[in-house]
Amino acid sequence: MDSARTSASPPTTSPSAKVGPWQSRNYRLQIVGAVISVLGTSAAPVAMAFAILDAGGSGTAVGLVSASGTLPAVLFFVIGGVVADRLPRHLVIVGANLVSAVAQSLFALVVFTHSVQVWQLMLFAGVNGLAIAFRMPATEGLLMRSVDRAYASKAFAIFRTSLNCAQVAGAALGGVLVAAFGPGWVLALDAATFLIVGVLAATMRVEGRLRKRVGLVTELREGWSEFVGRRWLWSVVAQSAVVNALGVGAFAVLGALASGRQLGGARDWGFILSCDAIGMILGGLLMVRLRPRRLLVTGTSAAALLVLPLAAFAAGAPLPVICAASLFAGVGVEIFSVNWMTTIRQEVPHEKFSRVAAYEALGSFGITPLGAALAGPAADRFGLDRTLWAATGAILAATAVVLAVPDVRRMRRAPEDDTAGGGGPR
Image (cartoon, rainbow, N blue to C red):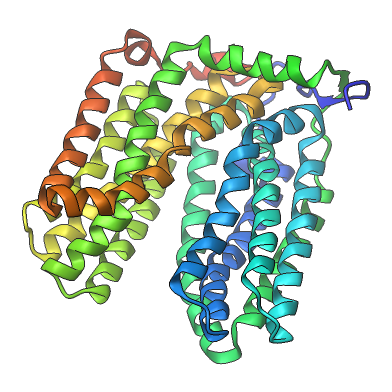
């Protein structure tokens, strides 16, 4: 594995060339592919849950299958980042989508044949999670390389907005299709979307020349050195770990509990989550137009907006106030995401981008399941309101700490005349 030569190096472009989002064929193909893929993957969890329940399974079985898909993704993110930096990234995407297509096809087959067994579904979900570990770093690296740095912020904002719209539509469509045709057909449709996206990725242009690569361990070490050697990078990742563990993982549990105790239960909780999704769409549209100069100050401050629904629940606010808080939290998520990816695209060398992105994803989301797992016991032990206030305080404290880091405060958007030439990141 260590002797072959691969890993696409940056393409050579004219110093005066500018590649905007819609001028890049690879970017257009990625937008189309991402929308198709997310429509399927957003509908699949609905189908998965009802396939298990219809077969007499329990909520525990649903949780086990879901966890089986998450764990391999987390464990293999870093290896996926190395592979994405070694091989032409569009081919990594092709391979990962083919693996997911096979896994979801087998999932659909056992549902059609009424032979659903939890261990089989856990296996299929695990294979799909493994594919995600390779697909995500490759997709992020290819996306950020498909357009010039001067357009990176706008390109990522458009991409995120498209994904959020597709996610909302896919989840709603999934419920309708499961009710009308059954979960097997929805899972088969998801498998077909993976095949379509794989075909689209296969038609993308190769990123650049192939270069000689070094050993796997050496490349892992290079990615780690790049990660820990940038104080702004690991500082923001540490904040993101806290925000995701409490504002996403714990909130998924605490919000549901609070909705059941203080509001109208599942219906109101659904309204709140819908407002969050709408907020993410609005945030993405906002970032298509805005170009904040202070990238990390803007992004990390916006991430702190996730405290709003936590605090609103803790204060016993009525449903409209909590919905508004959730909407602003969704806006904050997108402001952070766009500014964060713009910064990484600007500062991290292209040939190490996927490895750094993998370490970043592992750090940012690695303890999110722990936040969800501990939220319920904490609410039982200390009380729901105290737990909500504690989560709010921890997120604000983490934000204050990261904003005190000089490298975070000093990070600025690169001037367009420095980034419009298509050269590699500084």
